[in-house]
Image (tube, rainbow, N blue to C red; front, top):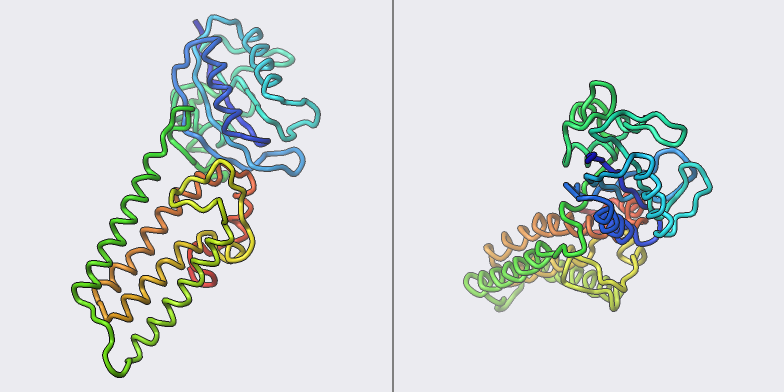
Length: 317
């Protein structure tokens, strides 16, 4: 039996589905001994194209290297890959990165892969599942990773198989509504509606609440049927980049925060104001998780994120 490390990549179509297909098919040619986290990387070389989803799968197989390579090419074809432009976009790319067998130097196959030690998108997932794997003479994956430096590779998901459950997203939603309840109780406890003349703080609170409500409402309408409390996009949703989303990537979170903050100021609740401000770091963390799911779903999200730098509130945060 030979232990192979297979590099997976996809930047066309349903990238996640292509990689899941590859893991399933690799299980038919050997025993899957490890599956790395899911990463996103910018394309290296070739024409202008979208970012890749990448992973590494460790497989133990009794197939000889050239036969194994043929099986990988068959899988790529089944996934709809069309071979043409060198280093061009592809539905599925499967490479033998390294193995624990003898080195191979053939016209169409080199093991270890000649560029494995230079690519973070290969080394980072490989070092995760097989850190001692040789990627060059006397150089192991973990060592090479320390030398290549940051090449813009981001981990998007630790578990991404077909049975992966988005439990973290549901936890964020539960915590969010618990936080809302806590703010409401705080405002009921130490707040009061204004009587007689209205002071400056309450006037400002009213303005902030109106702005927040408008931002949240307009942003929600812009999403339409794609609106959901969960930080994972709906299966039929498209990426929205217009309206408030041209100014901030998560304007509903910012609008809700402003509305609740304004309401706490109107009733003069110090505890409510403090808890409302605490929504900003909470929504920042929730949106960080949400952006990983959006980057998995939408190849264009990477460029959108670079273009729209504000996260929660247009022009501010």
